[in-house]
Length: 177
Image (cartoon, rainbow, N blue to C red; front, side, top):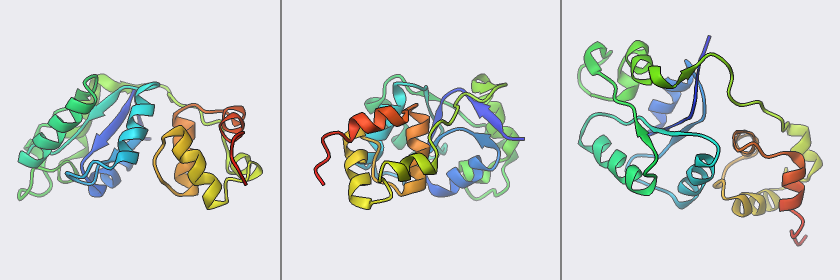
């Protein structure tokens, strides 16, 4: 069973996200290394309204720099420090190379017993609103500042941000076909 986190994680790379999503039930945002895309930062800002940001980066120089840059942008973000004594691969001090137990120990203060997010929006809701259309979806993504993403990720992000179908209808009211 996956562990639920009271907050959302910000990680360095896609390998970290893939590893963590195998045993954690929370939103995991991948920064892509040093890159800090505007859309991703906008989505994190929106998510900070409803959830606690937790920075989980590698304990190498690059990880410390990324964590410091993120703390400058999101001062309320918390750092979770992983002890790398039980690594799978001794070449790298990376999140993806450590053990599940090490990560869970670092995240212990944030683990909760119940599911924090209840997902209200479905694929059908977004299709009913015409958001299968890429142009219309891009308009909504820009309007709500959730970053550019595909249909499935749009639904997930809207659910994490607790938007309802009515909220989306209101956001799309000015859309010019």
